[in-house]
Amino acid sequence: MINYTLKQLYSFEAVVRLKSFTKASKELFITQPAVYMQIQQLTENIGSDLLKTHGKTVTPTYIGKLLYKTCLEVISLLEQSRVDINQTLDPDAGHLQIAVATTTNSFVSRALAQFKSKYPKMTFHLEVTNRELLLEKLSNNDTDLVIMGEPPNDMNLDIQPFMENPLIVIAHPENPLLHQNNTIEDLENETLITREQGSGTRHTIERVTGMVFDSEIQINSNEAIIEAVQAGLGIGFVSKHTVELELNYGIIKQLKMEKFPITRHWHVVHNKKSKLSPIAQRFKKFIIEHC
Ligand code: PGA
Image (tube, rainbow, N blue to C red; front, top):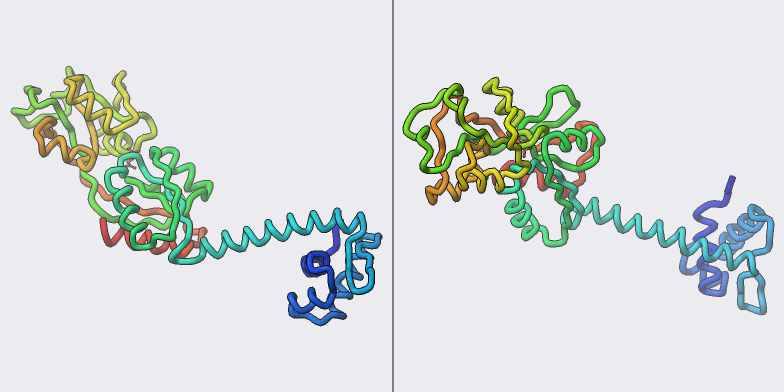
């Protein structure tokens, strides 16, 4: 087992780089005998001479050169890790890992842009995926924050609800069902366009209405569902946030339907066991207050 210490490596690196015990001791803010002692212990631990002295100049032996190369790599790794850690812990410049449900795309990117303009030094990694994969990330503690529709209650999670998320039924403007109040049975002869298995939108609709989507048309993108409805392919089920523009322009209509809209909330979620970094805490607060 390697039994030399970081203190010894730092001393050795400084002596070789500065070619002098005196200069190294000044740079390291320790006494010259203390530097000698570190190098002596290192030499004993390695079992070979590491330095040669010519007058006042110190140079490494062959083994010393090999060790010096390793020292540079170890010190540079440690320094980089210190920079990364400081940066992550700096509330103005930290790095945020965030994973969100596909459907939140409509507001999360905007919120991140506003947040970034407030804290320009921060960086983030945004992963957009469906509910199933978000649950996996939560259980592996693989991200700082998750934004999702319906967090599970059998995991040890910190869950904060914010903004409402109404789920609605949409149809082409010429669909005859738009003239009536519909029941679920009225959809029997319609082509239903749903999100993929694993989607939170689909999961909630099936849970609340008791419908089981076995349609052959499953699309893993809200935008593509809206396009398909617009093209007259069938009836779609989406969050109202994703279709606001099309509803305003009248190119898609909202169907009146029993049990709809299903109103629920978005949640900002993280594993209770994980300690949130300062930047993650700030973003969590920001999204709750601004969305
Ligand atoms: P989805 O997520 O994009 O997976 O449908 C929305 C949600 O979590 O409810």
